[in-house]
Length: 193
Image 1 (cartoon, rainbow, N blue to C red):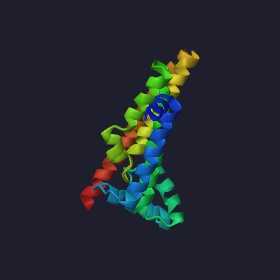
Image 2: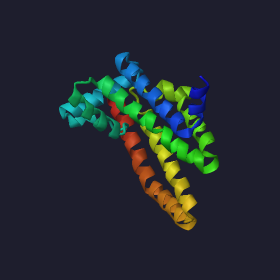
Image 3: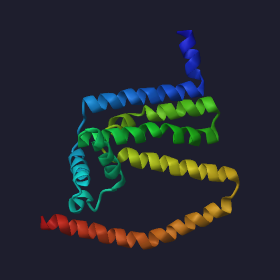
Image 4: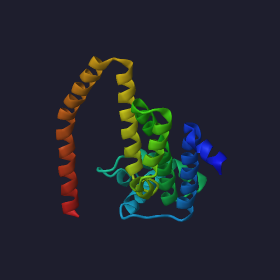
């Protein structure tokens, strides 16, 4: 027992144990599915992408990346729920590593590994990250963006980062009105139904 505890103190083994736990949880989720109210809409989109029904595949409010990657796993004979759960699980397990790099910016390696594993074991990640929902993709890419920002700050090029932030704000100034127009179109679509 003392040997196992000494192994888990090393960051590499701690992160490996978290990945193995995530893989076991993925297998359980695929065998015993968990469904949420939104999952039905996402499963319909995955089936529509698989069948090539592009008019109904991409709802105006959904991000299509998860549905496209999930439909790839239908090649292996999985149903839409299992495909979505598998892709969500991949993103959830992948969140361990950007969280580790972000925490390693502030802490030593062992504390960063423990912090990333504790982040991975948080109840929202375990409840919604492995379910057939789109949350895990957003969480993964948010952490990856933060990781890249911290890595960029570490490189010492802070002026370019400020310029990119201003540029992204200008992009939002043009994108936001278009997005609000899409929201209004979606509301009109719902009202017509």
